[in-house]
Structures are given as C-alpha cells and as structure tokens.
Length: 42
Image (cartoon, rainbow, N blue to C red; front, side, top):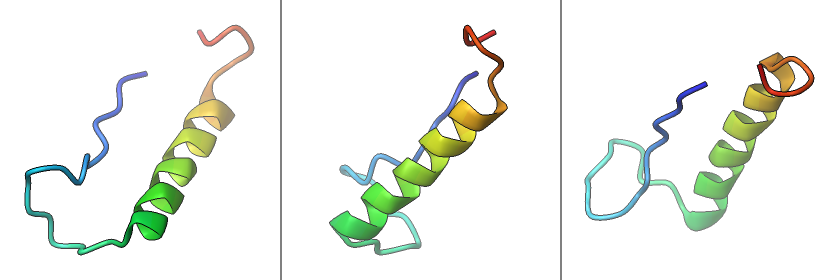
C-alpha cells in the first residue's frame, strides 16, 4: 500500500487544519490502511 498524506509542511493546502485535526486525519488514514490489509500486510 502506498499513501501520500498531506504533510502540512511548507506547502499550502486548502484545509487549514490545526495540529490536532491533522493528527486525527492521519490516524483515520492509518486505521483504514490497517483495516484493508490482510494479516501479514500482503
């Protein structure tokens, strides 16, 4: 699986997320990544 989340560093995004909101977004991405992977990550 390849992801490319917004890094919120030195690039303007249209979201203006706070640090807490940004971390929540990333946690959602990682939870979904984990959910769709089969055991062993393949």
